Image: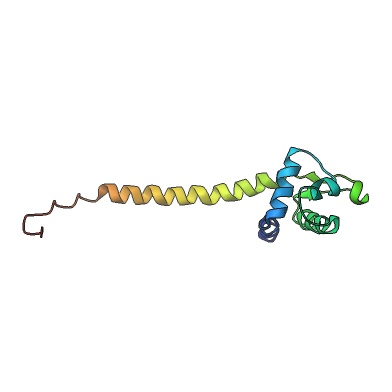
Length: 117
């Protein structure tokens, strides 16, 4: 997945309404009306949200209008997970190296009577 496409996916998921739609679509396909029902937004607004999700590759929809169900494209999440995991592993490796450095450091000397107030 190109960096530009990955940016579109993360940008699409930055909106809480779209994240809720993705969560709903994870359960099963849904029409625009079904996706609009739990939100205080118009069907047109839901259609715009779906277009953003489609442009990011997260959702597919046949061109049959509002009655056609939207479908979640789960493969995109696999690609996102691989990207996130790569950086998580790198961060964990840095922390392990820091742990090794800290473990190799001598323990500080206990305070002497002179050091205490």
